[in-house]
Length: 202
Image (spheres, rainbow, N blue to C red):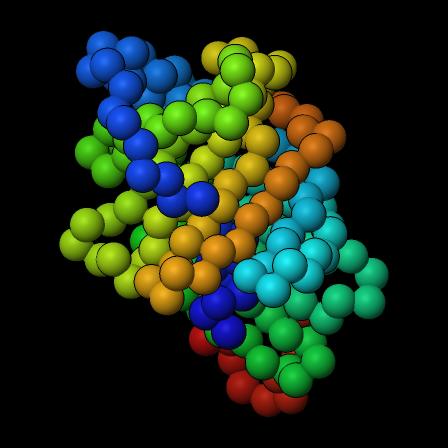
């Protein structure tokens, strides 16, 4: 189950960028992330076997996120700012992890100073910025590489997607399209129906 969380969340061996350029790029990314109030997008998630699933992403800062999978996929992932909850309706199971235990925390906790755990790595396309982030104290959380392109988001950037490399060298990727910023997203978006037959949510 943890691997599905990691999917949403290419480590590169790279020559470091000049310090001043890297600092400027990280600051630009930080401005973008902290400037996001809301965002919606379509996503395509590709796992380590090359299988892909689509869906829609809703994000509202601070910390709220929802991955709504395409029709027929009985999974839902919701973040409430403190934890990520995965609901598997096919087996009526609910799993929760602290946001800080996921590479996704880079995107949904804008209070973090990303310069403490992220670096700029070579980008695949001119005019884009790619950063790699990992927690050296917790290598089991994996490494996330995030791509930003020019767009109409805060700071003139737009989140393009991310790739996660887990501790077992399994790689999974999410790509975004149709990004929209500053849209209205209701509180109901981050609620979910508990499939468990008895007992309170945990």
